[in-house]
Image 1 (cartoon, rainbow, N blue to C red):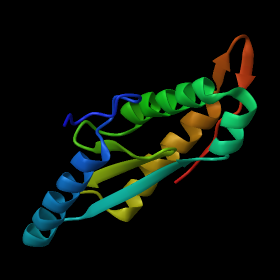
Image 2: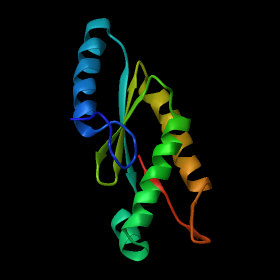
Image 3: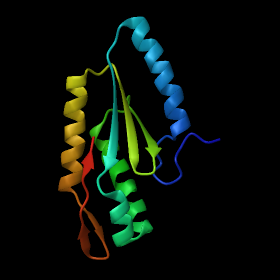
Image 4: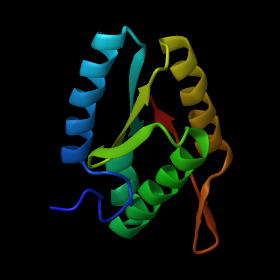
Length: 126
């Protein structure tokens, strides 16, 4: 079984769960901070119904690219479920995770998806 989600290129759920267990053990052992954020695409089912599944796929790919630019290379981003992306932030306090997540939320809102000449809305809840 591969480690990557075929659509987004992010890690898959199985890999996330293994890394989460490993990071939890490391966090307890060395008394470090660890944060986990779940990024949920707002209104994803309605978006798919209105614009089609291919537009929904493009929306998820766009958000995955934004994750790459908003989080550190040491953070692990994985497809958590259909419209959710998990971000594992090792050695990151809740306050610092909030800063990174807010950066992603703003980026997604400011850089809308364009499809066939139309600007399509996209927001996330984290």
